[in-house]
Image 1 (cartoon, one colour):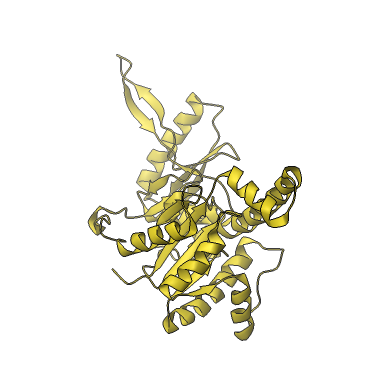
Image 2 (cartoon, rainbow, N blue to C red):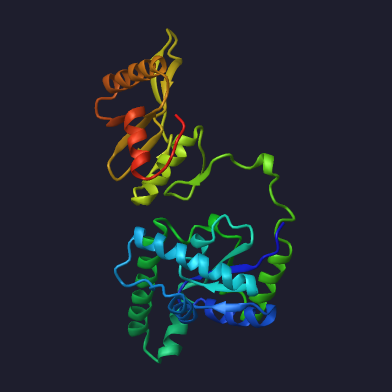
Length: 305
C-alpha cells in the first residue's frame, strides 16, 4: 500500500484532539495544518475560506480548492490536517489515514470547566454551544453523521488514554494499516452508506448515482428496506414479492428506479400496481428511464442506460 502522507483528525470538543495533533506532528515530523494555518494557505493561494453561511455546494467548491492546496503541501512533506471535514476531502485517498477522537461527556465538561474557569452550569452551556457549531459545520459539509465509525481507520476514546499513549496507538495503527485489509475481490462493487450508517451494496450503478443525488440534497434514504408480498399459493406461501429500491423516511415514500427495457418496465409497472392495490396506504413513486436520464444530466453525470 502507499505510504500514509496525510493524517486527518476529526474530534469532539475538548477530546484532546488538538493536543494529540500537535504531539503527533512533532513525533512524526509531519506539518500540522489547523484552521489558522489553513487560512494562511488559502490566502496565499488567493482562495476564500468558508464563511458562516455554509451549504453543501459551497463546501464542495471550497473542499476542491483545499484539497489542491494540501496536496501541494503534502508533496513537500507529510501533513496532519486537523478538523475542517478532512475525512470527506480526502475520502477514498489511499495516502490518507482518517482518525476520529472522542471522549466521555463528563471529561469533556471537566476540561471546559478547567479551561474557562467556570462552574458546571456555565461550562455545560459553553460545551453545548461549541458542539452545536461543530455539528452544524460538519452536517452541512458531510450531509451525514460525521461520527460514523465506518468512515475512519481508527476511533480513539481519550477517556482511557493520555495524549502520549494515544499517539503511540495511532502510530502503531498506521504502521499496521493494510496488513489485514479485505482482498480487493471481496470488497463491495458499489459501496455506500445509508443515513443510518449501514454499508450498502447496490445491484446497479444507477442506484448508486441516485443515492449520491439524495446525499447531495441531504435526503435520508434506506436501500431496499422492505419486501412486500404480492402473491401467495394455496398453502399461503409467498410466490411473488416486490422490494422498492429506496425508502425516504422524511417523506414516507418508496422510490423505484426503472432504467430497463420496455418489456421489463411493463412487468415492473404491474408489480407496482399490485402493490398499490394490496397496500393502499403505502406511497410509492416510479422514476422512469427518461426522468432518470434528465436528472443525471442536471447534475452533470453521464450514465450509459
